[in-house]
Length: 175
Image (cartoon, rainbow, N blue to C red):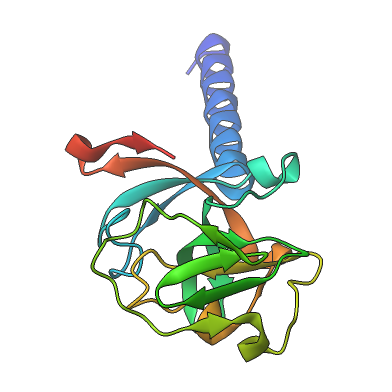
């Protein structure tokens, strides 16, 4: 090999290393791919759908009610749930109707035929949601491991917002 070939090899190798570092940075801190496991978010998300998780958004913007998030949970790698209750709010469910701060909150994303137990923050030992904590629920309230069982979620346990469904291809959707 001559000097020119060695130089081109080194330059090409450096380019490849830089691309790998950028991809790793993006996957660790900006976006990642995740998959729905189970039916707890049905009908919005179905089992085995593939999603893009935006890890970067909550570094600059507030978490909002209705956001679908991925969160760490002790027994599993992650859970995918919807943000329902925000810090400082009261939340209860009576006769399949969600109340936030004692006002009815309409949830168009739920199936019409759901029948689930009543719930109150008092069931978790709170009168209001504390600062930097959130109440999350699955859209399939009859079959969901969510705040009603695992308690309120700390902001630090939220990995990011689900931004895009990429699989199946005929159901691509921005959230």
